[in-house]
Image 1: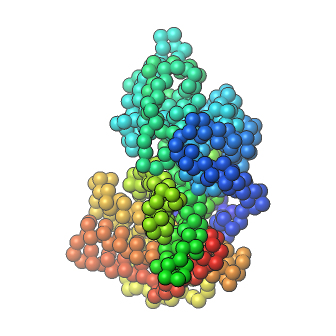
Image 2: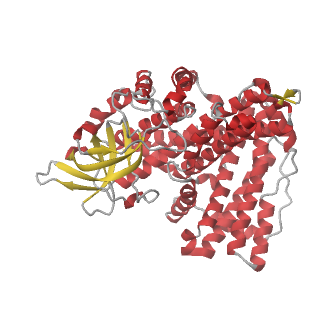
Length: 592
């Protein structure tokens, strides 16, 4: 794999197919881990979903204990702390499979992610030695206390306070946290609070046995009903000074970096849930007869199945491309002498733009998949007796978790522009080139006839479209751009489509190089369907922005440029989707 890719660079640099990881390359050990996760869900979770949703006393902790016995809570925990010490891409695979576990998926991801990782990555030697083995085994369960009634997206405005005791041995914590996943049974709380009148949060490792902790009753929620969600109150909670996590005022940085990780992991889990949902939809479409034949014979249903699969396949392509980039960046940092825990954080931080892109895309793919799943089931889709009711309700939280999709869209653009201003990414030179190209006579060069040459040409042009719109927006709106949320979100949508389009194209290209063109006809069809739709989406988003901030000749010139940069050849997407749906229907499952 290539280690030279930098986060955010996809917009200005061409990536080669040989340099990305694709899920078709899982090795035997990784496939065994995936199978273990799948078997765990089949034996312990899917047959107990009603009991889990009723929050049967002790059930969720006992399931986490079982997962701990199999090592599923410590896949990315180093061996010295009782884990498997697997790389980032492998931990993403486990996250993906577990993502089909409904409320259990939320509990296990909160425990292994935001519950364990702050201590693993920011704890000192003593803290890691004390807490990580018990978290990896499941003996202790973890939660993460950041959100407050008045501070959600604006996390650093939290009011929870920590004051040093007169003897200097404890911090006295007071405050209220809400929406705390695993709050009802957690033994360990990572709590964010401000010491005295600090500008930034600090983080503390709080044990339930310290006292001064009170819990509100379980929240009643639209979905993920089996996930324990409580308000947590700290009333003169005495935390030993040695339980300050990292340095004073480093809490906000911890929160941001753990959220970066959480975002890409959420995307993986969403795709895992999506695949199982499509399998159920295909099975139902093959079983359900109307007008004397299975509904899977009808074009309207076939469209839905193919579109579900296409969006999943594209999102998955992007998720594992970024996961391997993170892993490569981490290894390069370790090779350069950086401490392993720091390198892992830095690797993820470097790809924070991609993590935000994937969180938005993955959660919105899942939403589309469950919505159409209900529709394929028809009346039964609306019945609580059938599986789509729970899938539909449980999916909805993912567009809010780990920073709302609106916040993430704005972050995508904000982080890109900040990197450009710091000189980490040269966005200005390519943007100026595109601006000059607008004034010149359009090139009549036709891509050669090698496989995917045309699609690669589309991607290059899609990138020009966003560089043109973003470059003009920065020049026109200057300091006020940060307040123009509609423009930011449109530019973010263009960038999301570009990253995912390029990822699914690279995956198809690499897969063909391994298996040959004939063996990949469904994957090629999905890639072409995705790119065809992306061209329309990029044009629409770009047009909305340009029509807002430009006028007259400039506006007309930019709209003409947008049309040029998003132009794709006529494409029979009906036929391509039929190719995809035929494979799904024949296999009776999601099979890509």
